[in-house]
Length: 162
Image (tube, rainbow, N blue to C red):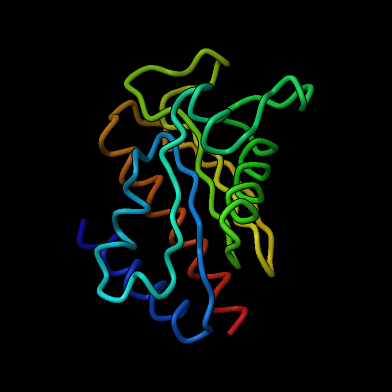
């Protein structure tokens, strides 16, 4: 938790300094990304909102994404992470969108991804997407690592933009 809090503090300072806002769609990190950013005093200056998009119902209701409209896209994939990041950013009118989608564990998901698999995307002035494989089936450890890696990537992009 301490590492995540430190990264969130750095991210919040960069967002405030740059006068920018963020919106988040996360799944297997279970809200830890949002919670870390919201724990920093002054979060209302940069955090517009987001959600834990954990099911198809949540995806359709919160993001307005129906996979019938996107043939070949599935959860826990880089294309979906990119779509979710762009969608949450646009829906909330943020400068940046973050998305995380994967399988925390202790088992894999129905798509064949192992526990410890997640895809992370950033959408804004810079766009990035990557897949993380922790090779661990520890649900809680994976959730914390997914959140940490997402904020670390975002901090790097914000620092480059500065």
